[in-house]
Amino acid sequence: MRRATAIAILIWLPLPAALADVFKSVDAQGHVQYSDTPTPGAQLVRMNSQRVPIQSTASPAATSTRTSGAVGQSGDQVHQQLEQEAAAREVQNQVAQTRADQCKEATDIYNQSVQARRIYTTGADGAREYLSDDEAAKARVAHKLEMDAACKAAP
Image 1 (cartoon, helix red, strand yellow):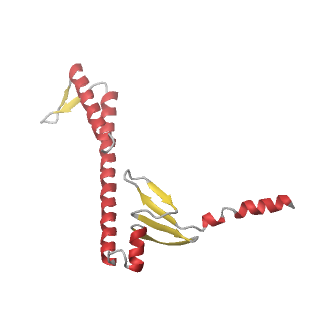
Image 2 (image 1 turned 90 degrees about the horizontal axis):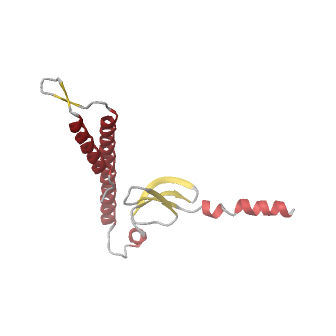
């Protein structure tokens, strides 16, 4: 009997946590984070164990602004601020994707130059002009530097 009671208690303990609101936010590095407390720019993902459409919430202060109007911002200002934050996040995501693409391209070029026995350039007439060993070594170093510059972390 005690064992059954203990199992029942253990099963029902996580229930209040499962019924909490869940907020989704993206930090400056682009990492997605989930929390039970709203933060600036967070989106409401789940509410009381029922899925709802994602709604943006700027902050607890902005939420109280929409409900009471006491803080000083109108609903239009809050909506504009949320749109600006969403646009800024979209730009950050696009910049991060562009950087990742550039890094991959630079890495591919460097790996090809390291694996190739001979490196060549294409002349104006389309003919291959092979580099000397010293020129090939300099080209590989240049490709390595370009890869490092393209793949370094964002400031």
